[in-house]
Image (cartoon, rainbow over all chains, first blue to last red; front, top):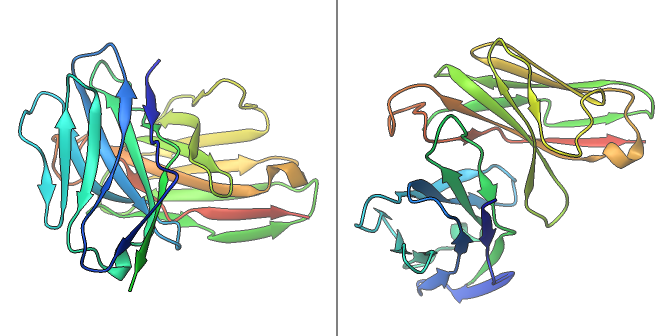
Length: 116
Length: 122
């Protein structure tokens, strides 16, 4: 079974600075998808960014980018120019690309605090 | 992005009663819907997966008779917590994925989440 590990229960960053959240995963599959979801205090899960494992290029979405290291099974999220609204719980998630299994496996999350 | 509406956002009920939570995909057809449970400061725990028109697939340890899931149409799934007890108090979240083109709105590779339902059983 796949597992997702987020080794940082909590992180903090100064407003306008850059922060990187770590995520590693364990899988024997070669084709899969990786996601970062954000859960602010409202508890609405919001998709931040996604990466297809077959793509070598790292995904970017405005201030959010990932460092996808397939061999190392690492998928970190970098938030640049942090804003107060970025404060949230961030979950890394894995999904197999095989068959019709669309289940997400989540990490335990990293609580990000943004200091003004 | 695609919108998933979950209702109610909060419910308080007496022990022994049943509670129904609705999950609707508003602008796409949801081929599959998922139901999660989340305890305070913890991750999401998948309870069950439901495909339209077929029985839900429950994760190990989830009581099928306690948590009834119905996915009668491509835009609606319901979770009914039967004979609720205080230990069922939790935050329940649904998500939906479409059957559309990968990467497109409602695309098959993305799960869109509802805003969650906080259930408190007295």
